[in-house]
Image (cartoon, rainbow, N blue to C red; front, side):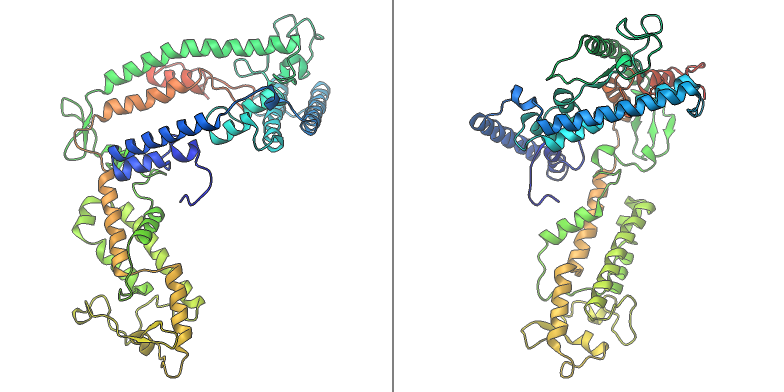
Length: 494
C-alpha cells in the first residue's frame, strides 16, 4: 500500500506484479491503464523540460573520505589475498570439495576480490550526495546500478573471462609486466583504479579482455537463442486449452489434464504465484465499503461460521480448488483470532466459541434482519443490550462508557460486519475466476516464448558477482541448449 513517498520506476512499472501499471491493467482494464501511462508520460516529459537533468565529471569525482575508505578496503583485500597465497604455497590452505590446490586458491581469491567491488559500491551509495546525478539514476531505477556508480567513482574491480580470473597468456604469467607464477590480485586482472582516475596500461589490457568477451557473447547468443526459441515454438504451436481445462494438441492427445495443475493463467495472478492476495483485497474492501451504524458487528465465532457457510456454496465448490479455499478460510480465521485478541485486550469477552444462552445470531430465522437494540451510553456511543445481557453486564452496574469506548477502539482497528465479509468473499471469487485460463488459449506458443525471451536476455556464460571462479556451463544458455537438444553427453555429469 503506497501512502506517500517517492514514485519511481520500481513503483510505477518495473515489470513486477505489484507495480501501479499492472494493477491498473488487471483491475481497471486496458483503456484505463493506457490513459494512466499517457498522462504520466506527458507529465514526466513536461517536468523534465522545466527542471532539467544533467551529468558531468564533477558527479563522479570521489571525495577525500570516499577515497580513503576505498583505499583501506583495497589494502585489506590485498593483505587477505597475500595471506591465502602464502598458505597455499606452504600447503596449509584446505582444499575446497572437488578441487585441487590451484583451483581452491583461485576460487578463494576471486571470492575476496569480487567482494571488494560490492563493498565499494555500498560505500559509494553512502558517501555520494543526495543530488548526485548517477546516484539518482541508480536509485530511482531509470539507468544503471550501484555497480556502475562504483566503477566510475571508486574501483572497476576484478575482471572475469570465462568465469575465472584472467588466465596466463604468456609463459606462467598474464602479461610481461609481472613476475612468473605471480598470483597477486594486480597480476591476475584486478583493476583498483576507477574510470574517473583512469586505468594503468596493465589494467587497461585486462579490462579490454573482459570487454571483448561481452561483445562476443552478445553476438553469438542472439543467433543461438533465436534458433532455440523457433524450435520450441514449432514443437508446441498446436497445444491449447480445451473446455474441460485439459491441454491437448491438434490430434486431441492430452498433454496435461489441467493447465499448470490449477488452470490458472500466470499473467492474471496477483503476485507470489497466487490468484488473490487476501491482505490487499481486505484493505481495499475496508477502505471502499461504507459501514453504517446499524450494521451488525460480527463476533469472532460468527466470522468463522459465515466463512464456513459461504465456502460450501456451489459457486465456490465448483469454480475454485480446495487448496485455495483452505488458504482463504485460514486467512479469515486469523482475522477472527486477531479480533478475539483485541476484545480480550480491551476487557471484552473473546467470543471465539458460541456461548450458552446467546441466540444463534446468524442462523436462526427470527434473528435474521433484526436490528440490534442499542442503548446510548453516557457519552452518546451505542451499547448493544444483547451482548451486555449475555455477558452478565448490567448497564446500570457496569460503566457503559468503558464498554462503548472499547468497542469504538476495536472497530477502528478491526471492524468485521456481514456486509464487509460478504463483499470480501465476493471479490475473492471474482478475482479467482478472472485468473482462470480461457479455453482456446494457445498455451504452447506462450510457453515457448516464455522460455525464449529470458534466454535471450541471459549472457552466454552468466557474469557473476559472487566470485565463484570455476563458473561452469551448468549455467546460462549452454545448459539450456543441452536440455532442449537432449544431449547424451552433458558437460557436467555430476
